[in-house]
Length: 364
Image (tube, rainbow, N blue to C red):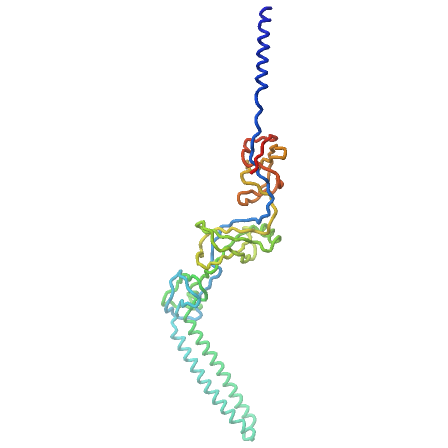
């Protein structure tokens, strides 16, 4: 019995000491979490497309007369001006035809003068009844016929002169002249192997094609007729082109294979900085302004294809919430579903959060 009484007070004392130590342990502090507001913004949706720059117009240089190519006056790939001589075709036969036409005209003019004189002399004779009216009619018909032959001869001369002029081929526009397969001495002209000699590509304005999904195109054309806005070009070097682009036109019909519509945008090229054939990226606004909810990109987590945010309520309680994302706008995500304007979301420290946990929000 003495042993029992001796140990009992010791057990009671140890138990009391343990209770005192448990009660004195401090409670954990709530996490401090940086938060940001889910913001309602009015924006124009912006997109980026890789593009291939090309000339907005290419002139085909085709000879109008046949003959042997006498001389070429350009170097392939160089810039030419409107009215600059490109080719000369040997024109000896054409000049011979012109001289023949001019001789025919001179003969026709002489015949007309003779017929006019005969008709004028016959008129007073007919009034005196020295000749019959039928004879007068014959003189008149001969004179009118000679006038017709003069007109036809003048047209032949004009045509022959044009053909002689066509032997010298000039550039119809300013641009870059392409390579020609024809060499000096080749027989060129309509219905020959060289019915087309070269092309000249305009370079004062270059264009680029942008492909849009048909559904997206239809949605925005119903909303806003302006369609594209604030068009900028970034060159392959990363440099931003200083001149803004403009919407030019929409190619007719959608692509049956890809289900896309092609929009053509144009860029002025006054300094000839752009080259046809080079690649770049076009950034553009599509459609009218829209009201959207946006949050900082670091507030959104993605796991197994699901996107989520931690919402910090007015009572400072953290709640996990799944959201549906749209496009990015700068450093922010557009939230299509799951948030309303004015709610606050965690932007750092969210990996430590648990549903229903109290936090101390820090605003951005």
